[in-house]
Length: 158
Image (cartoon, rainbow, N blue to C red; front, top):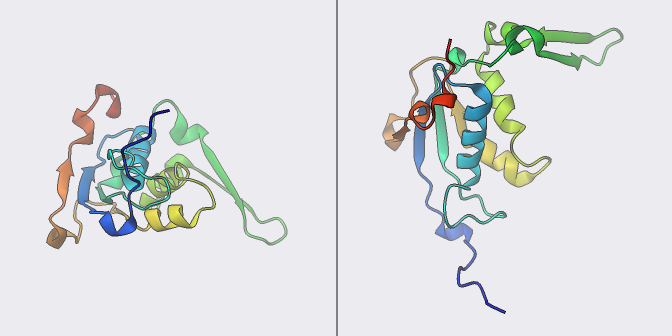
């Protein structure tokens, strides 16, 4: 039997990078899966499941994301306030047109990380989402990733 020559990554050996992704005209599901992969560190050859080895990810233009199909009108979110008769409902279009459009992308990424995990909660804190094109992380010198150029399916065609 062959032994693996790759040693598992230790938290002290982790080097995190900062990356910026422009979400304008990007398809939400594809973008969220790419972000979740970067947050977990699965793009690295040194990926270790129990170590937070992912990058810090900054998303700009989150209010300009797109969905395929009729998800803006047909995808409905329900929640309960805790009071009698307190069922609330909103469509995806109402959330994107509302006060906090970046929550759409935040929830999509959150649902692609491992469930009920302290590590996943820590990795989600490394995600910064901005509705506009300005962000306050210039001092970290983030690397720009052109997500839309990776595949023609990453951009919504009209």
